[in-house]
Length: 418
Image (tube, rainbow, N blue to C red; front, side, top):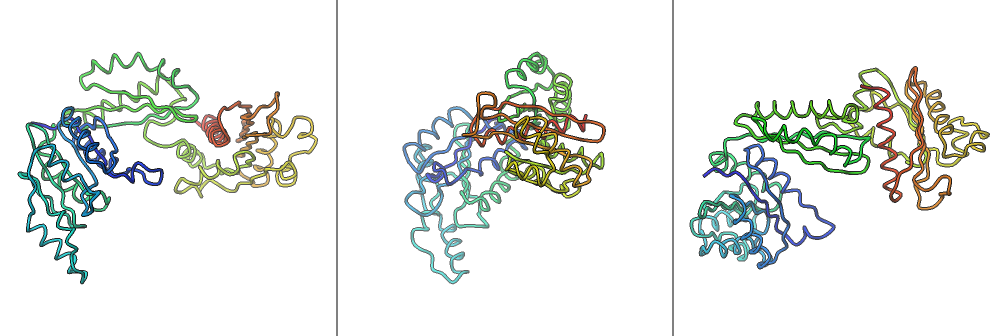
């Protein structure tokens, strides 16, 4: 029976703390998607026998494939192997070949194998053992009443090798023979509800298409993401369906859809600067270098980023950027005229084509009734065009700074585009 849908259970109490993040499930999801297997959901479970048993029973009732990662070590808190055997009612028995391999691995490092490592040689009856070239815990494959369970070790280096081997030898022959393709469309300048309202008429059309398209909207600070996915008998057909759908979204949303190929806003802006052979200089106040950091996070940004100045104090705006003190006195440091003077000043001193100025009140203090916390002025100057705008953002200090950098990049993109 083809494996259509899967669940990923990441096991380990450390994954329920703020200091550790489950990244294995991302790797597993990507590989399953390449085989056309949809991941229905993921769960993180601590090293608790009852909780893991309950999660496993639910997963086996809902999907055809359950992938468990972690909990295969030699210590008492590594319970995955025992719980799976219990749920599937399979007796555990030591596989002497695995024990010998573990002993040999320790011996190669001139060490004696601790007896507790024999736990890693326990195999549920009927399980297929997957040799681990990078560690002591083998992977396990079990099938039960049309369902399957794949057990993988937690360390990413070990998991990846076993996952790839299992994909080639076990999963691919049992995959549905469909290719799953995903596309992320990034949008800015619209709220989540406005985006949904605009693209919703497309959903009915996509649902009735020869290759149906599934869509999900996700919102974050200053940005909306529309995730499209399609499954087809060939990857080319799935790609073509997703591409056609993404073009439709682009037609509906216009310039607000700034990326249909996975690029970030800073990458899009960087590509536009390279295309026009423009260089940029930045004058930042409330963003404190965040805007420059985002641009220079892009590989190859030295082709267009010339310099940046963080002019936090009014005196710095005057001495480093040439902003007239009278302008600050008349309009205030957080104003469109001052942001524009900052952009023009850094552009002139750097002798580049593009100058950008950002000044604002990030909070939590410093706001007034006329200019509350979240007020940010952004200005961009390019050859033949100048633009400035006063924004009112909501949220804490970090949120204001992120939204300000996003607005500045988007203003620049629209001026340099389409």
